[in-house]
Length: 340
Image (cartoon, rainbow, N blue to C red; front, side):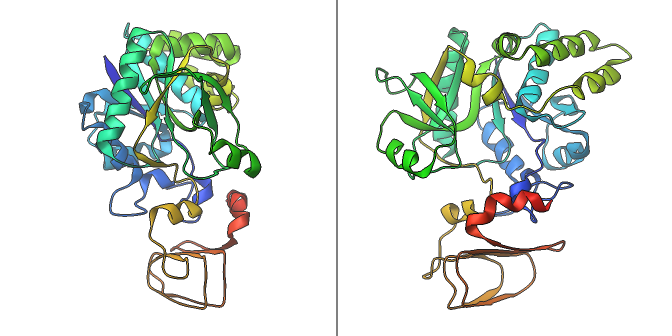
């Protein structure tokens, strides 16, 4: 039994002002007419039925999920608050286990850019077969094509086949010199944040490595189906610390495999990601919207409705929406979230 769980509760702070707390990036069209959530659901629906696709989000985003997808209401799992991916994935696992189900779960973000649906499907089905026969975690890794310092990396063991590779270690975001070195090593992959594992494996790993979360999940599971279910869920959830599943569990697990993904992948986490997805003009600018640029180089210009004119600037991000204007040097992009 294979099911997919899409995590869609984040605020998308690094893509402000296009992404806002009340309408974050996973629910808005950026490159074309569909939101990233809609594209993620459609991609999964090419090999899964809608009844096997779930979305986890917070209450204020439930209406967007309902408007943008054809998923049954019971396939929308609601968190009382956004507590990062460890709590999100743990909550999903106990929902299945409570009903005596132990499916293999694809847990993945809602806001990644992927091009190559067939290769995406093939990688996930390979991961599924491994997770179905071995109590382990299987991740999908992306072969680096640039010295990226904003992603985590995964090193696989030297002895491996072409489809499923034992993982040696997860590593944090490297500095530039380290990333330049790793891109030349065939055993390093980017961490896509896509994991495939049984619900029972998720529960066991959380018990081993995140006892505080495990205790909260135990109480939440005991309350499922009771009149006080929602109050117990909220009470226990609010006690939890925010922590990613990568840091809390994955990096500490001992049985992990990697399946290489041959599709084009980007996490669409910030404005500079557009430079990798949209063709630049002859001066190195990426532009969406009406504009005229004179002596302007290596800029990102995004406007929903307003004409933008620029003269004699370089290496800037300029974003205009109905709600705000952003002007930011590219090398300060990581600070955008401070404006929210």
